[in-house]
Length: 266
Image 1: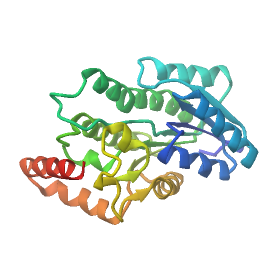
Image 2: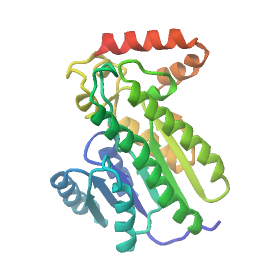
Image 3: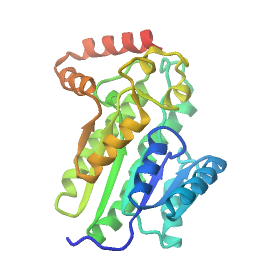
Image 4: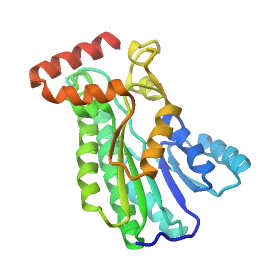
């Protein structure tokens, strides 16, 4: 298919911190207009103002909580109503929760499933169909290296990210030769706002080692891979090795090791 030459627009969820925040600048530097979706309007307003001043592009914000049922459809309808054709979709918004499944709040876990799985799936559905009709589109779904094994002490989070990988890899094949690409970014521990919301200590070793990546490093890596239509992309050599070798471990060994790691590094 021939790519339309009109100016492109990217929609990013969770752009107020971490990887999503860094992706804002990467798209803006390439003169791509933005639709930014997150809960906190005041932060979105500030980002919008800063980006317009620095890059002279169009920025539209839509404050909404994607962990609430029906919110993804509202985002899509907002774009339709405002004639915003989305060429790049980044499903970055997501969160985790540390702790025993038997002790964590079911309401919190339902919100996690709604955000990490349901909203991501709905946004992918709505926008990918329009992309397919136009013959061009790129989608990046942000998963995690936690997706490659069960995660005691982060059981629901790891399961939601496993869904993201399995779902994204499957539809990447379905969209093959359609002009629409699906990239799944799998970061390891990254310096961002994730650990605070997940309930990790501020000085948690998992997020304070010399090998811990910055959000900027991961965002640039993911952005380049997305633009080159790559499917499953894992940041960092150690993370790639871990994802490869964990496939050969018995389930009881995997769960034991992951539990010990989360417990020690919490």
